[in-house]
Figure 1 (tube, rainbow, N blue to C red):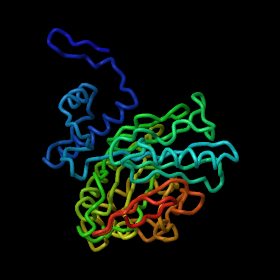
Figure 2 (cartoon, rainbow, N blue to C red):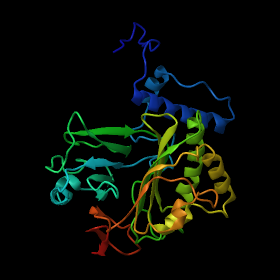
Figure 3 (cartoon, rainbow, N blue to C red):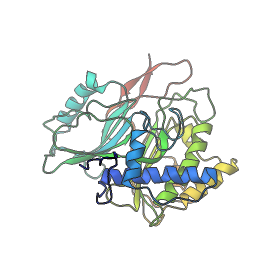
Length: 356
């Protein structure tokens, strides 16, 4: 660790950034570019580790992707966890019993969703989602006889948001993905706030890995924040929309989308809104659409053809992601409905919700 000299300065000239610092530097660069653009100033050079250190000393307690208050379109609340876990053949009943026991324990408080789906082609590979309003104490049952992973051959879980995952147990590699742009709302929207937030339905959760054009990461992040600013204001039913750099390849990103219900999904593309349409075209141009995007979509209804159509143009897009239907396909766990007006709901096993 570098020590300050007699004037209190620290030299960063011979220090190399860690992967986490590289992501933080990209995040800081996006903020700097946005501020310069708003003030009509020349775009400054990329920040250094010294700039990052200065930023950390003045950082507000609430992690954000750019300047903004706790309810801004650039603030991430809570944590969303997504990944896969491998189990031994024939051990699904063991996993389900362990998962259900964990899901009713004190370690699973504050959750909007906690579920797993077997992969359609590999039933011993489980797609896992946890969505917490704050920190997540445990990423599912920490120990299960069903798990095959070891410390030398771990499963991988990715986290998104400002919340922390306190414990994952043995045999799990946890990747913390720093948002370059976007937001995760602190809670579900007021059902009467605006069109696209009617409430009463199950949320659509999408986690995708998508290719971008080489060298376009900063442009994608800054243009996506413009889109998120509009979404955050106009569509309260968009509960989360963020982008992070893939930890292994700078020409790929992780896109997170959470919609309160199908109506909110439909409202995120309003072609009567010229400002939104233009902003989405600028943002979308940074993707390499020749590369199919991977990941998973979890929804109450996965049969809508619009889910495989470009948000910008009415044409199919190349996709290689799984679609999972709540309550079907061997689902384990629960997902809570977004409350409708004057209705209180509690999570029901298999993706339903019942009136309390």
